[in-house]
Length: 190
Image 1: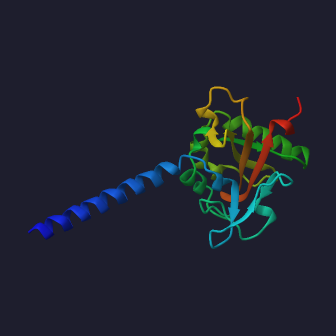
Image 2: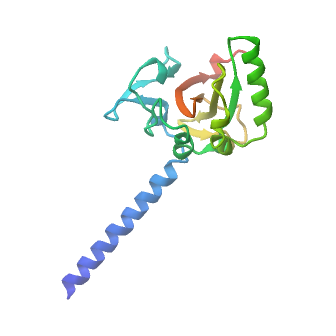
Image 3: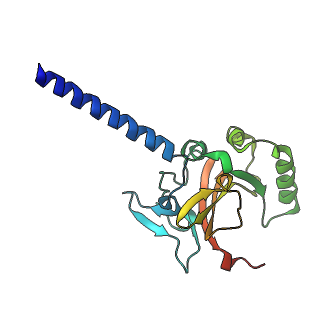
């Protein structure tokens, strides 16, 4: 009888420990970590990261890589919502080069969707035509004393060691590119 009690206690401890671990992993989806600032190969090993000389990395520049959370070029764009906390994300519809018509289309689309929250915009991606411009989500996280923070977690966003801009480019409802850029106060001219 004592043996059954010990086995029951052991099973209960393992189940509770597993539940706590699962809850911690679920909470981590809403937090940024240093691993999010690198790209990984198909085995999950770091393959490309920001350096002093290389302050911008882009999935489009090296084939076959993915984010720490497994997002790859070609994935359904709703993957952004399921893998990242959208609280601090914004989106932009713009163009860099192209015809006046492309610029007008970008401006009209941005005006039409300017009040739509980023989470809701993911459900409207089918409404964005492939007009030759750019649609992307972006967020900034900051490193202060070796810790990463979302902007919503900070009272003073001007006091940071490094800032990281993360951009998810969307085309035809799929991930088209992911860019990560690192900035320090020394990089920003006043």
